[in-house]
Length: 244
Ligand SMILES: Nc1ncnc2c1ncn2[C@@H]1O[C@H](COP(=O)(O)OP(=O)(O)OP(=O)(O)O)[C@@H](O)[C@H]1O
Ligand SMILES: [Mg+2]
Image (cartoon, rainbow, N blue to C red; front, side, top):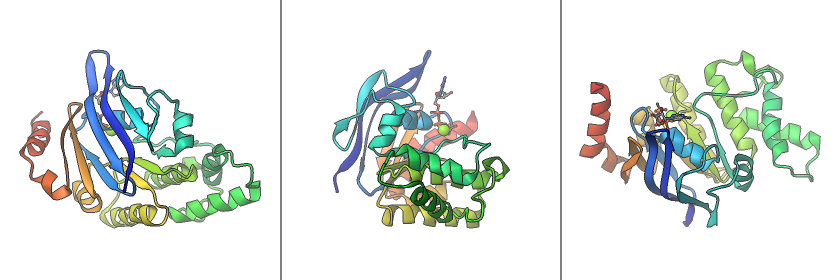
């Protein structure tokens, strides 16, 4: 299968707090890997390191064998890593179509005319079930629709690796099922590798090949979903949280 991304000894602090501590991890091409852990465990920070929002104080990141540790966000995006944000942030005053077009235009592919780009943006909106919202301002979408728009914006950059930060939060059970189907389709049809953060345990355990668990910045467990749910350190990390 081959490794698509690898982090070694990644460390990132904010003042006195070490949000990510000496984390080693890798993802194989075509895998769906879940990233879990209690609130404040460092999950989003790890995504921020992988997408160039922050740079680690220690450690290295390589993508398809190329070191990306110090690259800027747009450079990482061009290489093929895209992400959604836990706090959705589409361009609210723009239409849904324009929001997706930004990702497509950002690829800077001169062979494609604006008409083809528009068509592609429409297709992506349809793909995430936002057909009919093309001219709608992003501001008018519900939270769930905004999350779908975030996915379409990330997909528009045609990544090889997609990072999804809590895209299921706030969805009802039938919407979760739809979202899980979408994630599987992204893997099989678009041939992307998916790394996703989720607190909806049933869903992430069901849809992931492998799970990585962070607690207080450290990787405490990694394995198949059934290995992870029964792990005493993982259970303790979550129980500790509810006691707090
Ligand atoms: N920009 C920042 N400045 C200061 N502290 C930060 C910053 N970003 C994250 N932190 C802190 O780093 C720790 C890890 O945060 P992070 O957002 O990565 O956690 P998380 O696992 O994504 O949590 P959640 O499940 O609540 O989203 C937390 O203590 C958080 O307060
Ligand atoms: Mg987070």
